[in-house]
Length: 278
Figure 1 (cartoon, one colour):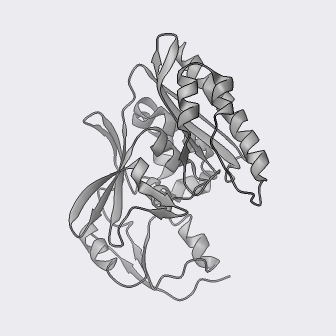
Figure 2 (cartoon, helix red, strand yellow):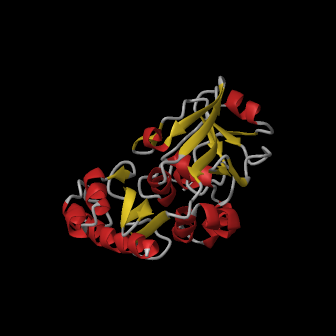
């Protein structure tokens, strides 16, 4: 199937991209690994496609002020191979090999994945688990949006109509940082049936500040605070029983199966957190 007709413009500066977004039904094109598919299936039919790949300075990966900053145009493969990410954002490093397949990771961007806000995607859940933030640039300049305020609904975010996601930031890992990640998919690289990204701190013989972000079980990545409290107290069984998830049936699995799998993943990830603490 071919996409509906659209105009194409290549933005050379961030300011130009912001201005072009003021045109009716305009969409940004970065890696295109999600957008092109929706265009071809006519699930999306913008009148203007704005290519931002020519904008410089949006693909860096660095540590600034205790935060790992990843530019929106950084390709998945860059993050996957980055020593900075491996050392300072180990949860993201764990998640990267699960994102699609090598051809997709070669073109797909981290900013695109976050902005697309697919509820079955790995990176939005990682951003939420790490208490990260998004940098957005619009007509009024830059602003920062916390991850917990960014994902509003199914494929919906807090970005304004003329805002460009320019970077994501997560706290740099410390010596006591603990992370865990697991997902279940029919084939490696496919969208997860259920997934879980987790972070916390080693605190003596236990854990503190546990954050659990499930994906594939709702319209956005979801934290489960009662389960977090139970796991912080060291009770894995109680954490599983406290899961407050209400997934829907879909083409991959029934709601009952998804909820069962969420408990399976919680046990696996809890083990990762506790083993890392030891």
